[in-house]
Amino acid sequence: MREFVQMIAVASLGSSYKKKPSVRANVTFVVLIGALFFSVCTYGLAQESNIEIEEAVGSPQITGFRSAQFGMSESETLEAIRRDFQLQQSRIASQTNDEDRTSSLVATVDEIFAGSEPAQVAYIHGYKQNKLIQVNVVWGSPVTEEVDPQTLVTTTNVLRKYFVSLGFDPDSTVVNTRIDDRVFIVFRGVDEQGRMALLQLISNQVPAAEGEEGEESEPQFRIDSLLLSYIEDIKDPDIFRIEKGDF
Image (cartoon, rainbow, N blue to C red; front, side, top):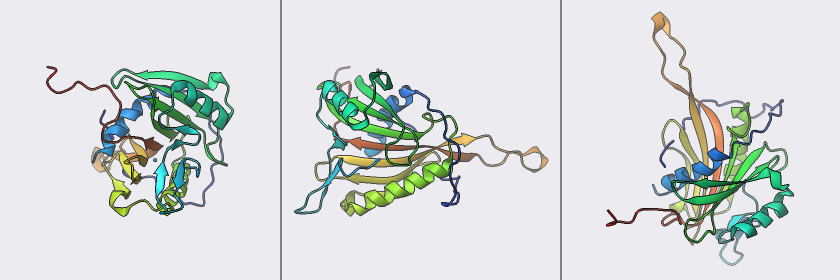
């Protein structure tokens, strides 16, 4: 449940992505990454429909992702996915997480927003209630075979500006914070109900080049994935845990 940025691949924002990579249906990564988010949160494509601004106080409210709302059953979530993305059943997979004992519906989407790269969206349902508790969106690896770090950085910058503009409480907000060489929190915001939007860049280590006299240089990391998560309950998620005293 624990893993992972150092932004090594910093490229010009003016560069373009010329080749559209093929999409890989590797849903296991997206589902299992849910455990990572639960771990990191204890230390977030944004659409206006899934983060609502209350007119009275201007407070952002994280309710889910588009028409998929926290608390929905799997059948209700499935209908929301079909409604949002007009996907055939063959593009929506079912997965389970043996450790957390949660279940997920995973959709492969060509465009989350206009001009964006392919993404996978995992809708995670809890262990006891079997209700929607978390939504994860991933761009880059393992969705596309050839990851362009610059494309991920560009998408990251757009999303960070969006989240920052929503007006989350500064005391519950984290922006541009490195966790370690692999994980970089781009944005983390918590609403008044304790629900979280978490946006992270994930890097993977690349082979080190040999220096002078055969000495290896310091390990280098390359941006590999962009992960966005919406989480209903960061303190007490509906996942399987052995209670104190059971052993």
